[in-house]
Image 1 (cartoon, rainbow, N blue to C red):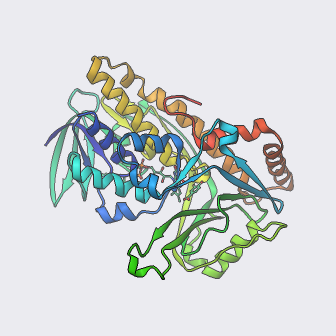
Image 2: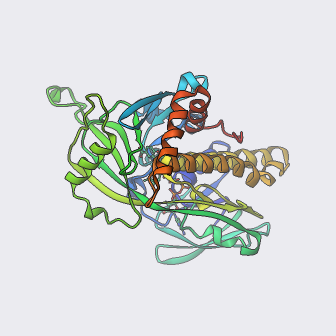
Length: 410
Ligand code: FAD
Ligand code: DHB
């Protein structure tokens, strides 16, 4: 098999890249090790920066997002039983974010790719990238029990943190920057209406909590069912837990009680409870692999970098990387100049490090490390006080949360 761009991984990075290339008339093949149902159900991100939503729209993949997604103009910070709203449009000249799950972004892109795009092979596991520093890189892969080779002009590794693409870059040419955190997130999905109309990020002596949501699910579109509820509400909620926590060690009652305690305020706010439908624990890490390119192999998304989820940046970085690659390759094909491809790693890393900085700041601002001293507690409160009392500090948060425009470092 032969293609111009061999894409490893059908997460948001690989799927969006295939779509952007298709729209520019550049052929690609996507290899995904898992099956379609797994990719479409894997619960992860929920917040799209304005730039990500704009790229999806421009790619012709934003129709359902615009219909069903929820535009959010702010978040709430909670600490010391108080609440403070950060108003994004007022602080950023009109920017906002979109609540629309990664699962739905993937479903939309998969449907488009299968209908209009090039081959997207599920249960096709890339085994290795060979000849990355030649003009003819190849992906060795296994599909339907057989080994095969995909001959490419370029390979883009969109295969996430545990993928194989990164391994094709010789260790002597790479530098890795990493930090792990002594806590993780217990995340749940619940059939419950959101407890607040916007996301709530709460700092508490017992640890961090986050109240988020998913767009409501339409239940009975038909007229005959007019007397039944038409929408089901879904809450997405997270609790800081010690590293290595078993999600089953937390029964539902305990999760709700803990969320309520960490988010309590002095006014009459209440937590909306409901049946919990999913429970997982995610470890947290910061990780950057430099460079993001070796010859004709390019890394994009989680394959090259990980952020702790507190700033909601992972999926958005992945979208930024592939938009940068697509622009660079289109430029190369139209003008013959490789200048943007040559600058790929540097261009992406500027944005990546700004997201690393912001995600680290949000994580250390809001989580309580085991053994944290009262001095550190007071510093966290002082940092939060600064954000809620200084327009400059609040603007810094709002600009980073809504995202720096693609192609600019920040
Ligand atoms: P992935 O989504 O990991 O996709 C990689 C794909 O490659 C997978 O489908 C995998 O099966 C496939 N693959 C791997 N190895 C191979 C192989 N050898 N051959 C073929 N295929 C392979 N980000 C945000 O922006 N906003 C948020 O609100 C947010 N919240 C999050 C909450 C949680 C709990 C978690 C865990 C993450 C969150 N993130 C968030 C991060 C975000 O989900 C990731 O950054 C995003 O999935 C990265 O996309 P990707 O396409 O690079 O990688
Ligand atoms: C969600 C995830 C995040 O990491 C975040 O910062 C905000 C919301 C979510 O899954 O809804």
